[in-house]
Length: 197
Length: 176
Image (cartoon, each protein chain N blue to C red):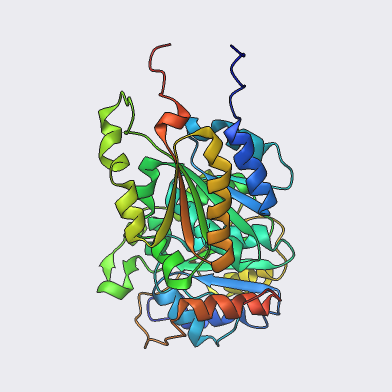
């Protein structure tokens, strides 16, 4: 599962996190690569893919987690998307939702735009430190397969806001593009929860 | 001459309108004009008050709430509108219902000239973002316009903004 640099490969990491997900796991990926990763792991009506709204994934996750306290919500986004909406970590830290995990796939680059370095490149900004400072008492550093398996297990039963930083290699796998009509994505997601589409 | 009628408690009327509409999440960046409404929402155990670091977070929060079956409202002042512009694409692309209540600055006896640039373009910017705009200038029209905004938003999954004019709110006191 590890790539040449010894870091986790993103597609395999995503697949491990959503394997055997059950009907009560709702997933919000971020704009760009994590949306393609989630689509590649298998389409699901309980995925809300983002084709825009950069910086908004974690806050969509918060609104959803507060509205559906009996479901588990996983925001799985990239370092660039998280950096754009870093204030959301402060907002979530204040709210302390018991059923929300924010997971950042960090490759230290903006993969969609030509692999330019992001703020986390080469040990720059420490997102775990940011999350901890914002009130996430539970932070996981994921650098290898055992830690990834540990995160997948933790996702099965959340008991407080969880932040995980997953070090992935800077790869650019073929795009797997999901549905991109926002009204369709919204409608099927709500229908899967038994709400009026 | 009769004693003047007591002032209409328009923040209380906004609150009762939000309750009637079944609002369960209130996202806000603290604002003096919304202070009383924020207090009423914070005191309500059936409303989750979510203080935001920037207004665009509230656009995403409301989308997530709707995905999960709850109605939300976003409270901000006029300067916050500018912070929301790209995130409003989320509501437009997916047709998420989005109800915004915006206290205006920079338009009436404004002491701070830096409020004018954003305040003066709230209307056209929101119109470009396909928001229906309702403007309340007097206390007795707040509730009716708020109700219309609620109907527009949740009846048809659209965007609406209720603008609360600076004349309604009163000017900010700068000397203490």
